[in-house]
Length: 128
Image (cartoon, rainbow, N blue to C red):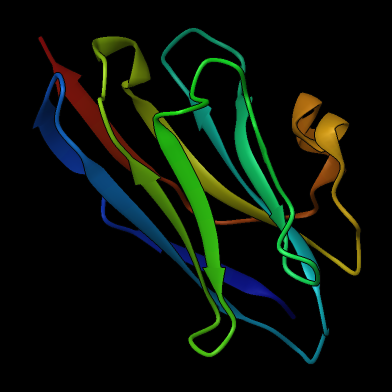
């Protein structure tokens, strides 16, 4: 059974940077669509960035394009989210998500229902 464990959250000032990590323990799947979602208090969970591990294609929400970078290290079975130029509105619980054998496309971030494995979440707080 695939399991995801996030780490790397914390508190940072506006304009700062944070890198999140998500370690994947899997049962032999070759490739995944993997993504980061976030959820702020009182708001819906929204997709932030996704990557298809087979081809390395990446997809981003408009709100984070140019500031966030998603990457996947196959040798370490780890997903990353590098977040630069952080804003107070980036404050949220960040979740790693995966769907084994699924090829991502730009619409994959529109619904949490596109992913069936979730991590426990890690908090990122950006102060002004």
